[in-house]
Image 1 (cartoon, rainbow, N blue to C red):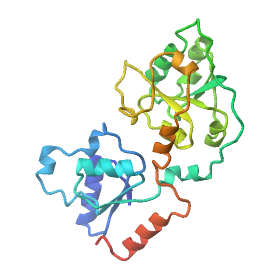
Image 2 (image 1 turned 60 degrees about the horizontal axis):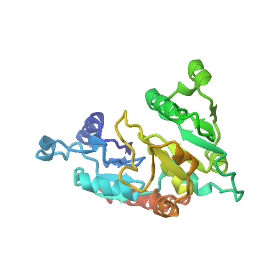
Image 3 (image 1 turned 90 degrees about the vertical axis):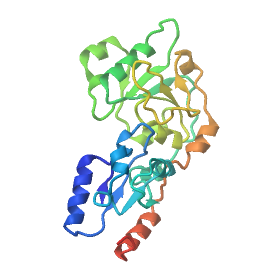
Image 4 (image 1 turned 60 degrees about the vertical axis):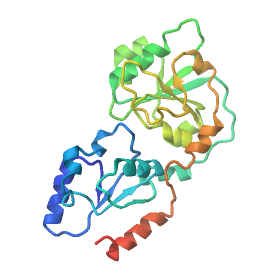
Length: 261
């Protein structure tokens, strides 16, 4: 089994695996698949050629959205099955606090890995000095040190946090995500309101494009941040989660019985 992103090295790996008769090979998609991920599309040449030597015997996805996209892409016409999202199974154990948070007291920005995306957000957030804004907290992207830079910290007033997801969920009701990440999904699943920063200087790569998740275009939207129960219901079961891993166990048993030989 290998992590599936449909990169060229994967095709070479699968081809070598099959040429050496190592047996069945299973591909696992660990994250959601967005409409803009071109690596999951085929070229016309690929579609017209035999691809049996570099296609996996089975593709596993961890959410219905990914399954839908894979079928839409018609990827290799390989059988697709759904399993629990190992990366997001921890959400099953999160306990939401019952304490009512003070309205408009603070807002959390989920940091991006792109520095200019983060910088554009800060410039937008602090652009209007006439409005009393809520306190800004930043959860940096693990691959970015942007918010730790001295010149940035001196220019803008914010607090960097490294809280666990469980603590964040119980301390923030207002969460802003960049338009190049799907990180906001976890917060929606846990019934937290999110907005997507509408960075017009960058391509909109958000999985929430054309959805009812609001885009942050005006600073006043932060003040009037409201919950959307419809979104909570829509995204509640986005990822397949179950601590018992019933689907994984079933698939492994089927594989051991040469179901996909």
